[in-house]
Image (spheres, rainbow, N blue to C red):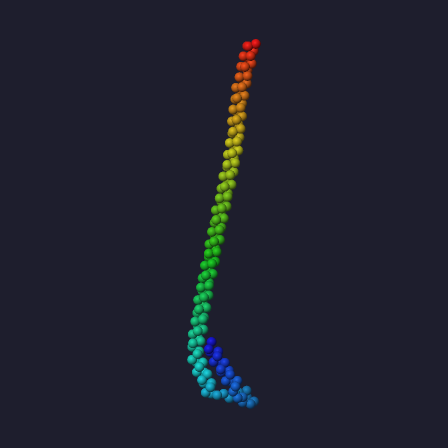
Amino acid sequence: MEILEVLEMLEDAIEKSASVPFTGKCIVDREELWEIIKEMRLKLPDDIKQAKWIKEERKRILLEAQKEADNVIKSAEDKIASLVDEHEVTKKAYEQADEIIAAAKKNAREIRLGTREYADSILNKVEEILGDTLDVIRVNREELK
């Protein structure tokens, strides 16, 4: 800021001024101090405007950063909700798959048992037919003898 340079000039003017012994006071060049004060008045409005602009810009940047942070948080929350939903869907899909597999195993077991019973019944009938046929063959052999 330019005003700081003007203040340094004021400090230099005071430091190089002659001291009044035993008083702690000094003799300054009045004209030089008036010039420094005039320069301060000229530069001060520009520095105040610049400081005000910087303050407003800082506020705008902070608001923008807050909005962006809010958007990031909302996006993360939405993603989490989506993942939770996907997890629920996946969980339900696995549960349904387990139910389908269990039902398929039960049906396969029932089919297997039914097939065995059917095969056993067919073999039993074949055994009966063969037994009857064997009886007929024995009778026919007896008749032949």
